[in-house]
Length: 234
Image 1: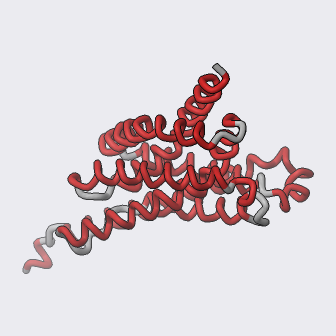
Image 2: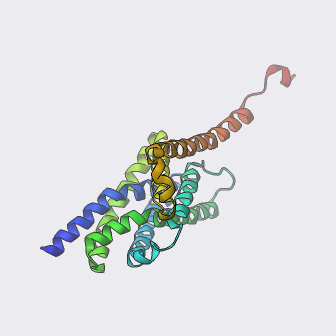
Image 3: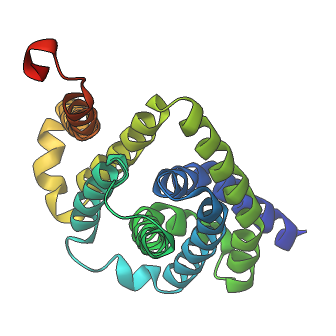
């Protein structure tokens, strides 16, 4: 019963925290060709779970690295902006698709490794030192992440504004990580009542940069695709 109770707790934790994984995987796969999107979701999930399993084993050592959360948060902000970038119009065909696929895989694994610290801590605590429990819980969470990523990808295709909400979630997570960095806590504690300013600035900045990145290509296509006026034709 203790084993089943611990396993249930781990599955519940993975369910609650799987949203970030699903968002990253869906946003990373959205610019891929249709025939590669499902492949990216499945292999991205497998890669993310593998990284998280390995991190669980060495989590105690990882947390002793000074500045890890600060650097990880900064990296996650960069990834959030990168995921908002529109698809490159240069080059097409199988080679271009393969290149984009491996780029998406790299983004998914790096982002999950960064975001996985909180998840790993929660899972490690619930497992009470049992690696078998951790692995079982993560394996059970795989179909949930795959389903969630597929669902979010479909929503993004229908409602592109969702990609900004996803990037905002990643940016929010990044700020939370950075403010939780042990060696800057003494500086954050006296002004913790104003921590919301950091969230507003970072989340707003990521969304603003993402909007500019997406609006620029549209303006460029409008300018170059505009029909010539009668005076210029003459």
